[in-house]
Image 1: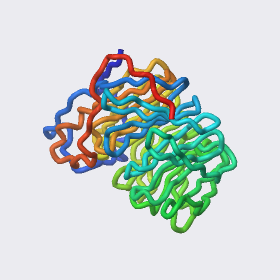
Image 2 (image 1 turned 90 degrees about the horizontal axis):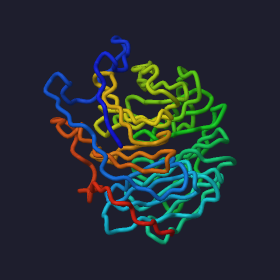
Image 3 (image 1 turned 180 degrees about the vertical axis):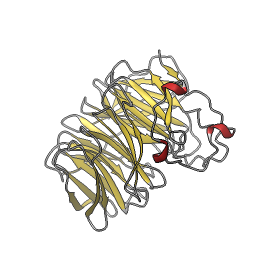
Length: 364
């Protein structure tokens, strides 16, 4: 049974007051902010191994997931529409992303390839062969013109997508596997996380490493840019979650023992006020970045929580786990942010709450 708990302030993750950074322009908790608990809306079952990545279609009608079972699955939120499977990769799929327009899905696999899929039920795809080892991460630029990938070959690669996909550049510097990478909002910069225990900030135009953050004591599994581009968040095998100021290059927030195991993913809410993390301790956690403390602990997965991400408007978030389940949650806690940004998502069909067993997925 999925459940959420809010910590007592004495048990909340703490940071040094003189290094805490306030994020966003919404009222603080003691200035009239109210919240409701997140709720589990849907559970999807169909993968035959752990779910490694999740991504919402910007139109909020579908969710795509990647799995160690070598496949992707597209889940429709309308109950009458069946889910379907994309088969093509020859090994585990570690990353998936929807393009900003929703007309392309990118995936990265242990088979060393990137595939670009047309979202239709036919499951048509083209293959990009740029890396010489497992592709751990794929991410689109905000305008959809570029694709960033990272690999066990220790490199990041940028692919241009206008007029047909083509390789553009390689960024080198990491000394071990690249686990995660993401563009900044304007794609001028990129950030990456690696098993070499570092987070690196890159100037994409100059093809150079701007800065190395080396405060983690183990492999860094996940990294993400704050929506306004002023900071980055990371999580690692040391069970630590950290936020750095991109401009000053200084550590802004540090959550020691954020989880009881490896931190597998980090994702900012579109408002920039909350951070969502997953871990091998089976939980999802929501962090209030304005207060600098733990906000919610979510228990639902029956094994390691491997991935999670917010919908484009922040109304929902989805998670995937080693238990082969995909869970879709309604955020709720941001609903009364009076000064928060308007939802950027299309009016969602919405993942309607349902306890009925899912239909068998179709195979594309």
